[in-house]
Length: 256
Image (tube, rainbow, N blue to C red):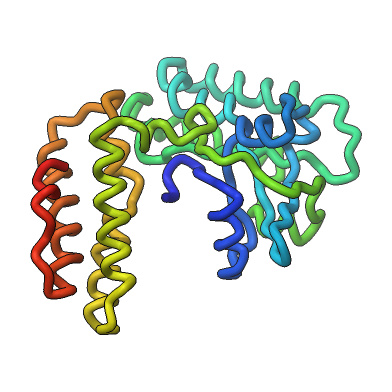
């Protein structure tokens, strides 16, 4: 599950084994990991996470700045929003004493915010990009790592997402839990298959069902008129997992 900057030691160890070099998650995950609120010197740098014989680098987004872009600045005159953004970044980085320069990471659901901005965010984004070019040095996360390396070391990481630093938006309610159990049982059945071709086809459908949005829309906190459509697609993909094994789909799928 990759939605919302979701991380766990187990998931990141798997990614590290697969050769993934870095991930991005939320500042609240860093706070839970450290057991205290991080300073800007702790937040604005990458951390090396060692997991057994593997390592992966973790960047933590500035949650406040990311949420201002996502949920607040669209209500402001775009010029004032840019001024506020610049002032906050400069304020957070004032008196910087670290050897490496601060790295401010903004991460957000990029498809959601712009409907609420003037002209779908075009004036704001063009002005913001010009301001970033003028006042800061934009660079990729890989380039920062190559140039400056990590600024801290971690031996574990808190499990959660950028929503409340936990998983409850995706799991815990009865309908969600039934869907997870059905997914796990279908995966176990596919994994036990002795037919490589059937197994590969089944896993194509499993990978679709493992997307986080299926479980997001099963939360009572989130509503959509398309719920029945989404639920039907989820059931159809799970059913196909069983059919690829030459088995009848369990009847309980109809209750998901």
